[in-house]
Length: 270
Ligand code: 1HE
Image (tube, rainbow, N blue to C red; front, side, top):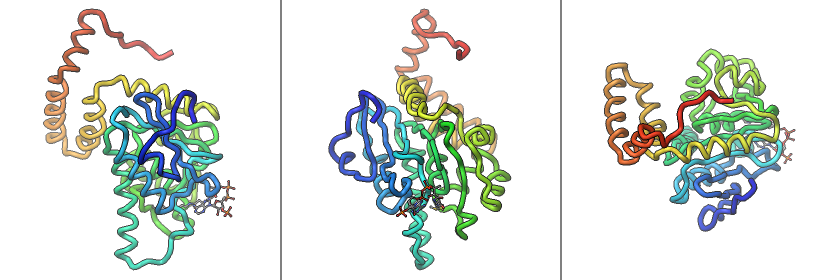
């Protein structure tokens, strides 16, 4: 557990494949199935869904990481039994529902990545809003080699991060990207040394938590939809969102604080 974080109580404490802890507005969710490299079985996907639907009221940012040497080995292949087609579709839809709750939930989610981030593990990471990779992280889509296809939203989210050509290459050839290649390809926004991911993630989470809730809402819910709209509709949606955001009391307070010299200036990062 990160220093000063305390274990969650109530429903979140009953989720045995997750380790959930909190400090003020930041909630840390750790995948907790290290003996199976945090492979996602039906129970774990349902527990992830439950956690994101039941974040404590005070939560303003979530950190997600993996226990052990790897972030996540993807789908638990021992559960990939032959099913009726409709049951297989619904199994994939169960993943979609869980990752929708991550991407379009209440608060931004930061994934802290190390070791294997493969298959469904990369799909989970892609549903988060910010990705931090430690030196040890590597990215793969072994579905191609296993004779299957992504089913956890990967074909929708991963090309939007790295482009369809790179994802095609990963799936057809089994190409694995290391942490630096992942950063260059657009999979991750931050690169840190091994062991420093949680500290970086926490620093980012605290910045996020200090924003107005309307900012998180606009960035999480309006921005990805605007990007998918035709430019004319996108610009109109942007104007509606901007008008709604600027007219909140909190935005007005923050603007006044700047004009009265009480708020920070924009500075170059060191
Ligand atoms: C697993 C899984 C798993 C490990 N399902 N049991 N994902 C993959 O194709 C990745 C498969 N896993 C691996 O390539 C490796 O396990 C790792 C590179 C992630 C880690 O290697 P290593 O040497 O640290 O561990 P290991 O010895 O391979 O695995 C330890 C145990 O975890 C072992 O079980 P044990 O009972 O013999 O100890 C493994 O069988 C088990 N394990 N990964 C089940 N994935 C919604 S569609 C998404 C589709 C996909 O995600 S496809 C990609 C699946």
